[in-house]
Image 1 (cartoon, rainbow, N blue to C red):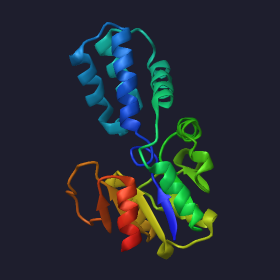
Image 2 (image 1 turned 120 degrees about the vertical axis):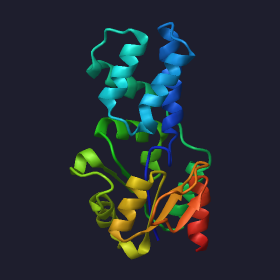
Image 3 (image 1 turned 135 degrees about the vertical axis):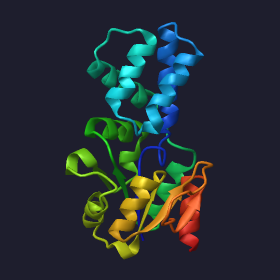
Image 4 (image 1 turned 60 degrees about the vertical axis):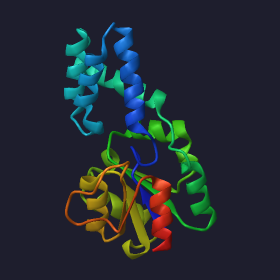
Amino acid sequence: MIWLFDLDNTLVDRDGAFRAWAVETVAAHDGGPSDLAAILEADGGGFAPKDAVAATVRDVLGRATPVERLIEEMRAGIRRHIVLYPGVTDLLAELRAGGDPVGIVTNGVSHQQRGKIERTGLDRLVDTVVVSEEVGVAKPDPRPVEIALERLGGTAADAWMIGDAAHADVAAGRAAGTRTGWVAHGRAWAGEGAPDVIGPTTPDVVDQARAS
């Protein structure tokens, strides 16, 4: 079996890292709870345009920093605070020890996504990494998933695509022909075309997938 994982909020706690940076930044600029709430809402779980998030940070904190610099400050703060979810290291090591190839398929800019991967040690726990900026196409297009499968020498029939984003991860896996797993983080599935398995955490999704 081939296991393909999204990165943010699937293997690493991206939202927790953003919140930690936001708390730090609001405190450093004498902001208050309403400022923090506005920044967290603007982030949209990482899916909002980065220039819009940075503009919100600038406006609510009264900063004169150019948006482009704030984006890089924000990205650096996320990298600084990023951590793996509990159980991820053991999970990936176990899959590979059993002979199963493991890959990461992630949307984002190369230096940011690879920076998170290197900081958390994921580069030593997976067999390939596909970053959308590097291949010129992003999920939900199936091509990043297909590229990962090509690199790992497998087919969609033998693969799972697992992630937290229904519109990107599940959609891309389905379009590529893999089985799909959704990391719910306490949410209920609300869309059409439900994934093959749903679980609260990534290790739980993999457990269900292996048992299916």
